[in-house]
Length: 429
Image (tube, rainbow, N blue to C red; front, top):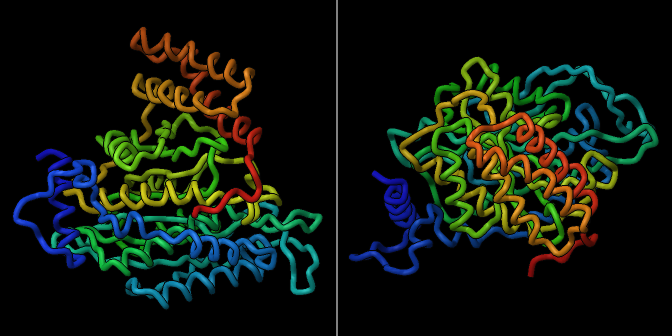
């Protein structure tokens, strides 16, 4: 049975669950809408004002940068727990909160009760939060698509400047809560269960995700896919807001599925080979590295202008980007929660010609921006030439491999920083 037919069948099931009457014959137009797994009431129902309010709370100065062991971190955890307790999601057997001892060796700073800068503790009781949207299929409801967002951040610098972590990662936390609100408001469920996981100590080396994987609240064998949202909320360029999907090469057929979701929702996408992105990580890595390697994918907005600085404030978030990306994340999660197939992790995959073709396609989208300088266009062309040569040769050469890595770092670390766009950005109407 084709993937498209699966989606049509799941759409019919979902519409039935939301109370929409079944029709004797399918509506012939438009075909793209018929393929969506989620009903329009969900895809169009995300409230950017609610998300903005949540981000402004989580990334406020009085949260002190949410470094573990600080008063602000405790307040953020209390607030997330309150949201889950007041919502319509279901706790696991141990409740919405999971306490786990955690330790790290990184030097962090926080504000104490008097407002003085002091070292943050390296031994803490990590607080992680979990909630379930139960599945509707008796044969699949005991399997999970895990949606993760870490809520901790880096505290303050030694001068007391707060690193608010709006982009990293308050927007993702707020987006997951908004997704839960809309799904429960619309009474939507999928064959598999969704497990929302808000992790701790991600900034200290994915410690919270590793702790959960090592003693998972559900059997790892029941996790069909783990998706980490980190970070979200800024475009790559002022007129170009792609969603980055990293690691789809580790699951057979997933690259095509994400490309299809992006095409249907008209969102630009960059699917990068995870093994080629050096110096960055997120919580899905813990699932790949766990005792039972589990399929995962990393979802991010690549607008890294104020990443890990005291300037990562709520006013810098572009909610037009969130409004574009959250429906695609939701549709992707719904597709995997509805499919009879699951991701069997293939392990780390080296770069392929498909990766080279993907980055050339992405360059073409980037170059449509009106904000690129002539030097930046020349730099992209310099990366593209050895990659195209490898495509023509049918073999990933060392030169193409190097150009691939350099192009990813260039777009993340230089291009986005050079083009921050207006602050604050226009709010979606």
